[in-house]
Amino acid sequence: MIRSEVLGEDSLYHSRHGRRSLLKAKTILSRIDSTSGTFLDVGCNQGVVSMELMSKLKGFDFTGIELQEGTLNKVLKDDPRFQLIEADVGKFSPINSYDYIFYGAVHHHIVRDYGFNRAAEVFFWLCAITNEKLFFETGHL
Image 1 (cartoon, rainbow, N blue to C red):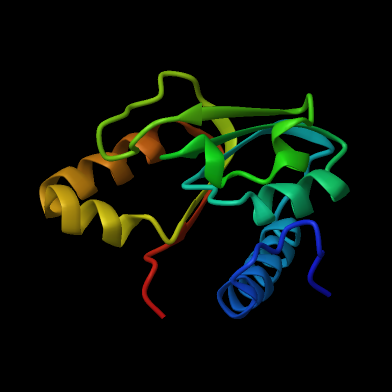
Image 2 (tube, helix red, strand yellow):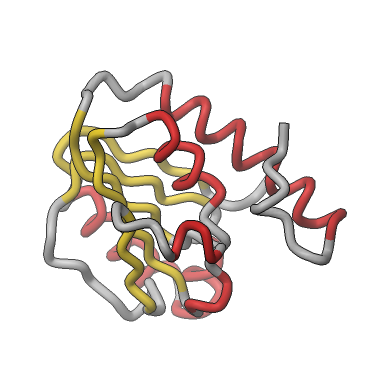
């Protein structure tokens, strides 16, 4: 089921993206064994993964990193458990640590825009600030 509040005007793209994001959230949920914690969604886009996780993980605080705030779904933006960091992840290094991090479908953009070395640096600093588990997806099907 794709939540209508997540879908935008480009229904084909958002429908496909939404379905894949909900499957990713389901996989992540199956691997989280805590009742509270912190979660970082790197390149959160509209926030489909974060919204789904927030509906199930009531004791968690969420942070998303996204290039443009306007991309984020308003429902998520208005949720007090969610904080947005508007930044280019290829140029940004968060200093906080997080219990769980989802680094999904962003890595290939960093490789394209900044090269493999910078993409590797981003991956390694995400590993360094992860307390429990890092969920990684390259972004290529």
